[in-house]
Amino acid sequence: MRRLTSAFAVEVFDRRNARSERLAEFFAIYVQFFGPEHRTATNELLDFLADPPADRQITYFGLTYNDEPCGFATFMYYPDGPIGIIDHLVIAPNLRGVGGFFSFCDLIASHLEKKKVLFDHIVVEVMLNEQHMASSIKPMLLVRLMRLVGFRVAKTAYWAPDPAIVSDAAGCKAALLFVSQPERQELPTTEFIRLVELIYEVHYGRWYERTMSAADHRRYLTASRDLRRRIEAAVAGQQRVVLNGMKHLDLPFSVDPNPPANPSTLFYILLAAIPAVVGVAVAFAQELWVTLASLVGVVAVIALFAIHPKLRRLLMRAFRLAE
Image 1 (tube, rainbow, N blue to C red):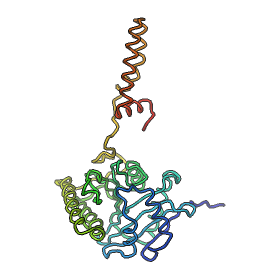
Image 2: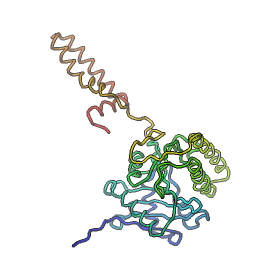
Image 3: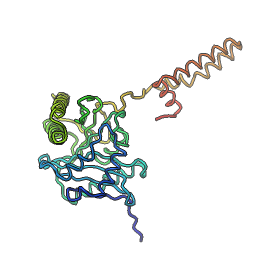
């Protein structure tokens, strides 16, 4: 009997090997495939790993395929939560489709189980604005992949407190996902607010207190507290916050700021009927001016659909040329 094993593997880094050259290779993957708008500077990642704050335990994971670096993620564990936050997740897009993602998640989970890391929740943020994509995987696909490995989306408005909130809060709209022990389908609103406060004040706030100038940090805190109040207002009056599972995903924010229209079946019937209508008109009239008028009308309609971006998407969808 032969045993076949995966070519994927994970290398684990903590403060003891923070200065290793091997970690620098995974940082290179992170820089190459993580969107610059929300990318944390690698010197900050290195500094925090080498000298972590007392409030958290930090582990970095490097994904390899046949020993070649192809992915990176960070894991921050907060014993006071107790929660873990996975961040900076990136995988080279040319590695076996999404197989690398599932292997990466499985290997990280195996490591946490072996280390007996106890947590109530592991949390992930997914930025939803495709114009500010934070990784090589599109937001909607990443949300779906996360749900396939057990994460559930909090059904409420959420903004990731990235430094960009000072100038572009709309670009930081995000989905907040949880995997819980034991599995949960909803959270008490008080617990949800407590976790948001930990994410905002501890996970992000103390990081940027260490890396920003005093003036920049004050502006950041003002913006982050405003967003936190908006999150709290969104769940005000609710006893519990629903965590969506594999069905009925209902994100409070649209993934695409200019989402493609979803026309009715009647629209497609009318669009497909244009050539037939023109043919019938010409056949009955059998006059040159009718033919020319029909051709001009068809060309005008097609040109309108070709020039206007939203109409062009409708036309392409009609003939299954686009997603």
